[in-house]
Image (cartoon, rainbow, N blue to C red; front, side, top):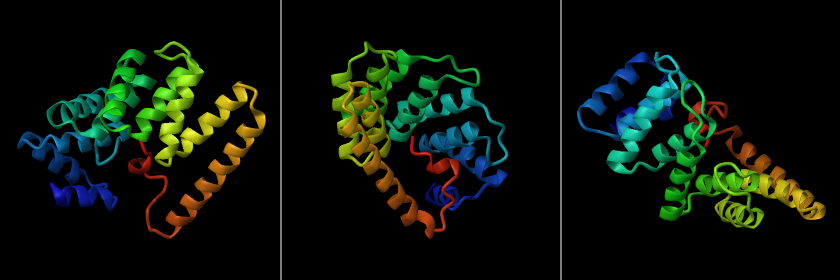
Length: 194
């Protein structure tokens, strides 16, 4: 399993890697289902893009071992609804709430903030959205900063909004600079962050 994960992280896009994860999943390694889900979601490693199969594999990894990234992937697919998956804001909200309550993961906090800011699957509540974005920002979420800046603009707090946008831009530039020479492909789907 470790070797297969290292191969994914190194950018191995061979068809054999999908077969290896499929074999690992069949041998009782539910973590392999998460990686199969990624491959089906992105249509890589010789697999056709199939969001329904991706969701099935993410759900299995989440249900069987509580794999955090699998929960977040399910939430993302349910939130956006695409490729045969019906948009399910209630289902996405339940998953993000579960993750937020378990470990306050910044993606769950950010997405819940977004849902409350725009009234998607939740009653619009700008104060709750602000608290959730702040929780995401505490963990370094640049998207949390950008959305909080938009929320401030919605509240007509224009100066605070501008300052937060500038801060987010500076932090994003620093992250990009840090990874520029890391050898990582910054456009690779595995680096999408949730």
